Structure formats: C-alpha cells, structure tokens
Amino acid sequence: MTINLRKIEFFNREQEKEEIINILKTEPRVVNFIYGPINSGKSTLIENLIENLPRDYIVFYINLRERMISSYNDFIEILFEYEFEEEKKIKKAKELIPGVIEGVKMLSGIPISTKVFEKIFAEEKPKNAFRCIMKVIEEIKRKNKIPVLIIDEMQKIGDVKVNGLLIYEVFNFFIRLTKEKHLCHVFAISSDSLFIETVYADAKLSGRCRYLLVDDFDKETAKKFLGKYGFSVKEQNIAYNYFGGKPLDLSNLVSLSGGSNIKKIADDGISERMYHLRDMLDKLLYVKINISSDGENIPVKREKLIEVMRMFEDTGEIKDINISRAEKRYLINENILFIDPIRNIIKPQSKLDLVAIRDVLDEVEKSGKTRRLNKR
Image (cartoon, rainbow, N blue to C red; front, side, top):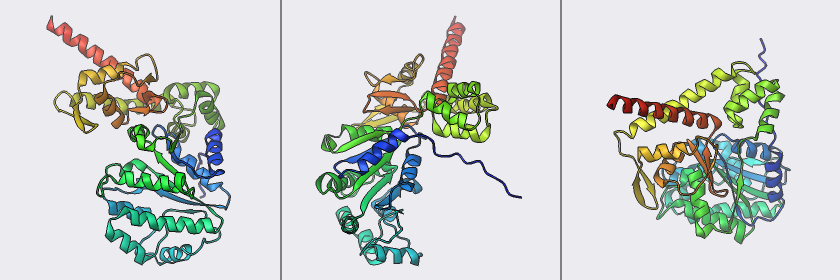
C-alpha cells in the first residue's frame, strides 16, 4: 500500500528572499546576521534560498545545532568537511582544493585533506584554521564562482575559549572575508536574541554588520497559509487568535488537525507553557538563581519577574526601556520572551506564550487574594 504523506511546502518569505538575493548580487562588504524568534523559519528560508541559487554560487552551510560544542576542537570538527571513515569525502576534499567540482552547489563544511585537518586539530590556533579556509575561498573566486559561508546557530560557540573567546576570532575572520577583502558573503543565523543583543552592542562590530529579521507571519500571511490547506475563514481566524503567525505552530496545526480540534491543540500547547511558567515561579520561592550580566551575577527576584510578565497583560510587545535586567534576561534565556535589539522591543516567543503568561498571572492574582482572605 502506498501512503501519500502530506507535505508542508515552503511559503511566502518573498520580501526576505529578495533582500538576501540583492545582498548576494553585490560585493561582500559586511557580515549578515539573520535573527528572529524561535521557529520563525530562519533555517528553512536559507535552505530554500540555497536550493534556488544559480550554479555560480558555492555555499558552505555549517549547522552548529548538530552537536554539542564545548571546545575549539569540537568547532573545528564541524567546521571542516572531514570524517576519518569516509574515503569519498577525503577524495572530494582533495579535488576541491585545486578547483571546484562541477555541479556542486552546497557543502556541509570546508573541504581539506587529512594531513591539513590533523595539523589544524592539534594546533588549537584559530588563525591557522581560518588561513586554510581563506585559501579554499580564494581558489573558488579564481574559478569565477561566488563563495557564500553560512553558520547556523552561531551562538553555540559564544562561550568557547581559545586564549580568549573564540567568537571574537571568528568575527574578526568574518570581517576580513567581507569588509576587508570582499571575498565571500557571510551569514550568521541565530534564534538566541541575547546573543544578537550582545553582537549589536559591541562597538568593534559597529558598521561591519547588517541585521536581517525573520519574524513570524503577519495575520494576512498566516491566514493565506492556512487557507492553502483548506482551512475555512472562520478556522483561520480561530487559529490565528491562538497561534498567531508562528510558522512551526501553523504547520503543526495543518499536520494534526486540518482545521478540526484547533482549540484542543492550542489548549495543549498553552498547558505545556503554563507548566513551565509555574515551575519557574515555584523554583524561585526556594532556589536562588543568578543571571550573569556584564561580568556580574545578579539575583533573579520572583516579584520582579511577575512585574515583567504583567507588562504583557494588555499588549503583545513592549519597549525595552526601564525593565529589570536580571528578570528580563532570565525570561529570554528560558525562551519565554524574545528581544529585538534593533527595533528595541520585547515580546513573547509566540502567541501561545503570551496566552500562557496571562493565564498564569490570573492564577497568581487569585492565589494572592486567597492568601489575603486566609489572613483575615
């Protein structure tokens, strides 16, 4: 029996695609940071874009999500397209260094020989690794191809140290590839908004980076997406009221319901998020939690955390002004809130998170009233 699986196709994003294509048509001059809330479709956008690029482009797409990176050597292993067991990869690496294989458009890492890899792996000197990458990119340019380097989940190397933080060595290399030598387009992708905030605030990177937001769908786009899969206008409105424009949530809704049981699926999602929020607030009653900020450990206070949550009682987003720093960062670390430092706004990661915040605040308020009555 043949089973026809329902495929959720790539949808919309024409504006974002056009912006990135225009970047790729010009000489590399800055590092591009692609950011947005979790599950907003950043990686999907890039993968779709790569599939449709002309053959003139050679893309190195390195996804740091695939493994834990706690050391320089972990980073090197994933940065270079090398595995000891696979003769084919070694052969391809040797072929790619002197030239570019026809028909190859995307590679999952930088190709190098066994000997070079082992030397780089043993040295723990980032500059030598980057020098090797530079040679590969320069060879691609000599073949009249356009190299593109994409690092997904960039924040995963944020704490790795090699005589200092590795991330700054990486940034300096990116700047050399783009602003100084104009050799290669560089895109760094991250859903960690605190990481993007740190990058944006770094004076050394000012004027050397461009920031591209990939946000959730707006209402009109979300409804068009659902309409494509047979949702009635009424169902589209109900779905948007619960799920907003989060592409992953809407795709899951299509897969799970096809228009039926929208409320049940939403209730399950809200319950899951409410459990997380309750657990977080309960933990703060008996555990001291500190957030590191600017080299200092700042305590997270339950009352102030509730105050930050209350800012969303009547709105879906707020300005990042005069908000208690430790509590704000804690909620962002817990993937409850998303901060957009370029637009200077903070909002819940999804519509489900917003509903869960409001429902938990109602519980906190009722619990407070009960305690006050019991004291009388």
